[in-house]
Picture 1 (cartoon, rainbow, N blue to C red):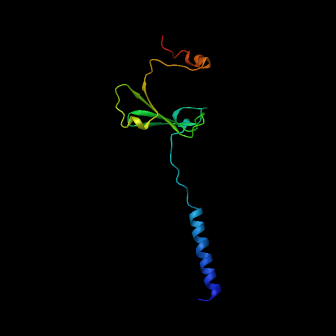
Picture 2: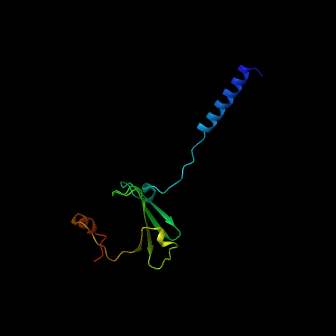
Picture 3: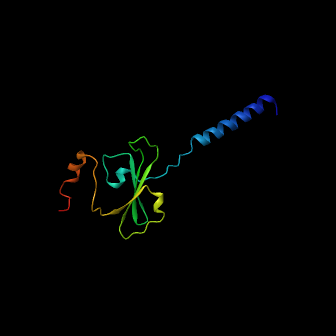
Length: 115
């Protein structure tokens, strides 16, 4: 092979490889988006069903932490494997709640509130 034909062969092979890699459909990890769970306007978290409980992951916490926060919501009789892998395990239905600001109170009062 002469020098120019070798160069053409290498250039063609390189261009073919680049086109094959670039044109490949990216594989996307399918996550539960807020829209798929009936949440219309809230963002920054995901809701997923794991075995027999629900996991809520806060993707962009407001605080200075870079850590993603993960909460497990389970009924009282459900056993959760590796509960230490979650930031908190909440047993539902909740009976008591503590609010840290009076601005939270109006959102807790409504027709869904138990009397």
